[in-house]
Image (cartoon, rainbow, N blue to C red):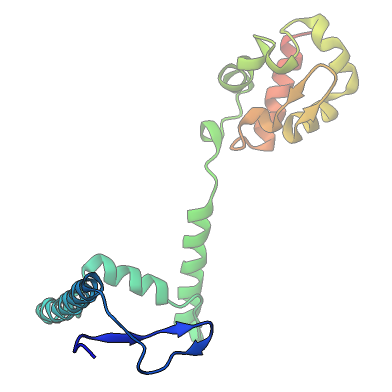
Length: 195
């Protein structure tokens, strides 16, 4: 025909005859040229990025770990338990048990003091002087019905907590570091104070 690039026509699902060729438009050729250039540029960029990554990776030594990272790795792979054998093993086991007990020991409030007045002033007075949460007021009249229930029930309610009609008593007055004995002497102090 005319020597230009051409494509075959497809008409209604049938192939057109070979002598019916349509020349490719000039703008189609321009698009194909630019598209091929973009693809070639992207391939070149990809190759350059791979080469530069190899160069950078060759300069960085992967075996250099910081002391913090080494400590994390050792902590992660440390054994969960240990086997103790003989006298040396028994003493090591006892030392480990004592260290664990000391680490988990609960600190006792007020250094274990059994002074009801001290505990009342620093813990209980916050609610009982203001009536917060329905706490009984510091009067004999407010404490009379509670006194009738008995010391043991009041101590149980103070230790475990209590929800009544008037309000809520948090367990140990919201101080879990108080011992049961500290709570008992404080309840006794309050009963004596509000006779």
